[in-house]
Length: 369
Image (tube, rainbow, N blue to C red; front, side):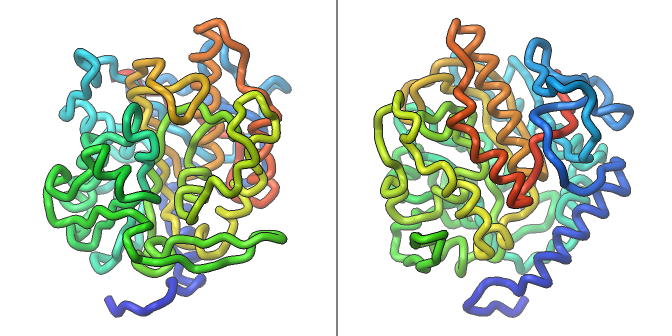
């Protein structure tokens, strides 16, 4: 594939998204992403064998009754055997990833699932995998999951290892987390945005941000892999925040306060605003994964793990998966005797809906392995 110095043309991106929507719609009955509600609805007859398509017990986020389906799906895979003695079991993690991808695509074969999710895939694509290793001491993305994702992209989709770039904002966080090329099977590139790639300065409202060129120039598309954890200013650290804030230089410049009790601790409007930049939203593949084997339910993001959860969340919609992450965090908080995350901290989700970045009304496919 002929490479150029700038981002892919927007028409190619629109074609990619359109083809993905058509592929998923034909296989699973899913329709376009529009409208908003505030949580899961019954997944109906398309739910996979052995899956509960209903909303979470005690966590129904649709207080106004039945909602019109948007056709957006969130897959929630749970396996208590994914953790053994506080450590991840690689084979189980891989099986959960495969099952989740197949359920998301409505396929019973891993290769077919990836082709359905990324129908216009070209082996020449240079794909970034944006991870979150900021809390490298306690809760970074695991090498078990990222390694399994790399392997399935190579073995089942036909991606080239040398075309895969696993990255985060700081290289030191990746190193401290053990996220190295050799650990991930070799061939891939692992680097921080601070490693000399540079930044493009872009306008957001009345401000400007410096966006990593790993996202805007060095890769054709990016996959988003984030974590299940509370955030003092944004409510949850999810997919939208992982790509938007995780790709800019000095993201703390957009945090007004480190005080977790300050309702204005984060300029929350910047989460969807940065993601809505053409250089971001046109370069992120419609596949979002939230790693929830471990979780932080309070005082996050840079604190110790509070819960062993054993979950993996997947969706083609960043707002829907972030909404479901909030449901799960609130479930953990309630079980621990805490109040739910303040809605004032998560108002950015509705703003993201207004910007047509996704929906908070989704169909939940809950899989117990």
